[in-house]
Length: 137
Image (cartoon, rainbow, N blue to C red; front, side, top):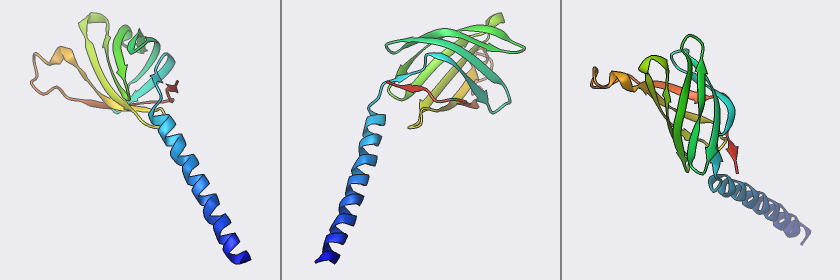
């Protein structure tokens, strides 16, 4: 009898733990992601970009800065886990960025220079990732 009680207690503990983990995953998946604030990305080509963004609903606006290029205006949107924005760099260069926010709040994505699209049919893409997590509201 004690043995069965211990087994039941062990199984109950596992089930409660399992439900706790499952509940946390559901809560994380259902959150509204907020990308406002100061954060940075690292690109696979070695370039880093620093952001100062604000978010109102799904609309994202702000500035981006990278040494050697300067400051550019940012506009885009967040929809669920998807993020898309453009950086309007000085001298008419426009960077298009798309990304997905993972469960930990980090973003990974691709970018390319849209000013090359009229010259090169398949513009080269560069991978990027955020260096800090976004906020889950």
